[in-house]
Length: 191
Image (cartoon, rainbow, N blue to C red; front, side, top):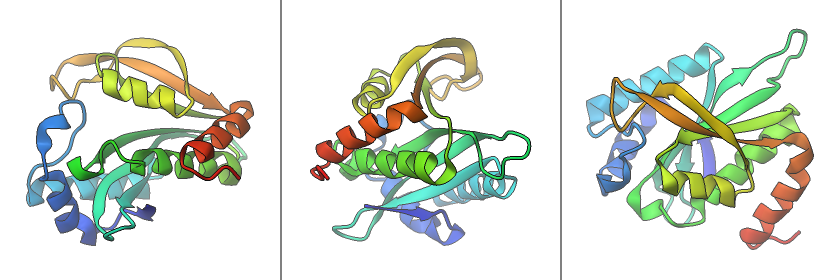
C-alpha cells in the first residue's frame, strides 16, 4: 500500500473505487459521481493549499489501484514552530474491496509515523461519530486511547444538517513507540 499526495488527475479512479459497493458509506462523505468527486477533490486540494489539510490517496500495491482517501486535517500550529504540533487523521474512506484488509492499518501506521517522527507532533487526534461502532473499534485497534465525547461537535454525515456527537481518541508522542511497535507486529513486520 502506498499513500500518494492527492491529485486532480485521480478523480476517475477514485470515482470507480467509490462505486464498488456504497453500503458502508453511511458515516463518511464519499462522492457517488465523477462531478461530485471532482468537487470533493477540488475542495480537499483547496484545504491543502490553505494549510488546513494534507490529503492522500491510498494505492493498493497488488494491482496498483487507487482505493480511497485519507488525510491530516485540523492541523494545529504553535507560534515559531515551522511544523504542526498536532494533527487529526480523518476523512478516511476505502473502496469495498479494500475494507477489512491491512490497507487501513498500514495507512494509519504511515500517517502516525510521519506525524510523530517527521513533524514531531505532540499528539494525533482521531474523531468519529459516536454511533459509528465499526470506526470506533478500528481506532482502538490501532492503539488510540478513548478520551471522551464532544456533544454536538460536528455535522453528521449520516444526518446532514444535524449535529453529531463525536467520540474523540488520541495518541500522544510518548505512546508512539508502543503503538508503532504494535502496528508493525500486526502488519507482520516485527522489526
